[in-house]
Every structure is written in structure tokens, then in C-alpha cells.
Length: 124
Ligand code: B9F
Image 1 (tube, rainbow, N blue to C red):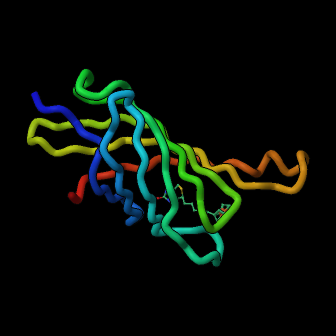
Image 2 (image 1 turned 90 degrees about the vertical axis):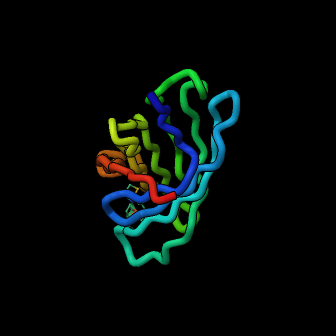
């Protein structure tokens, strides 16, 4: 059976795109994230991501995690997920994310984190 590979160009159901570079021997990778959505009127800019997966070439459907440091705000999003290969050779990334917003005081902590899911499919 073929292995699900993280490197490449991916799109999620929101229309966001990300490019993941080659995964190194330790499982580390970097990439660029272009979100299609933002909850404010902030101007969207491509943002760097950094993550790791279980050591390459050992897992057929590897688990992984990565962090996106938004260049246009003081927020970060972490994603965790798994790379799946179906019986037709189609790859999908099933993920969950947490978005942490910078708030001005501990009293505002309760509203600082958003959670959700994203499914990515390969476009290249
Ligand atoms: O909208 C976020 C943001 C941070 C500070 C002002 C705006 C940044 C973009 C997050 C994009 C999320 C979605 N895109 C995607 O592909 S990451 C998870 C989703 N998947 C307003 C204040 C704090 C948050 C929103 Fe903001």
C-alpha cells in the first residue's frame, strides 16, 4: 500500500491553501499557509508554518502537528491531524485546530481560544 505524504500543496474546505516542504529525516517540516478567511477586516498575508510528523518512511498514514504564526496578527493556530490514503490513492489530511488570540488581561482568557476542524485535499 502507498504511503500518505505530507509534502505538497493542499486546500481545505474553507478554500485555504498551504504548501508543505519536504519532510526531513527527523520528521520536521516547514511551509506556508494562505488562509481564505479571517474573522476581522485585517489584510490577509501568507504566513509561515512549522511542524513535525512521526518519522518519515515508517508510517503509512502518519500523524502530525504544525503551528501557523500569523504574520498579520498576534495570534497563532496549532493543527494536529493524520494523513490518510484511501484505496484509490487519494490523500486527505484530517485535522483539528486551536486558534489562540492575544487578549489584554487574564480576565479575558475565557474567550481567547477558538477550536475547529479542517479537511485538506491535495492539489499538487
Ligand atoms: O482570523 C484570525 C485572526 C487573528 C487575529 C485577527 C484575525 C487569523 C486567521 C485564522 C485562520 C483560521 C482558519 N483558516 C483556516 O484555514 S486558522 C483555522 C481556520 N482554518 C479574530 C481575532 C482572533 C481570531 C479572529 Fe483574529
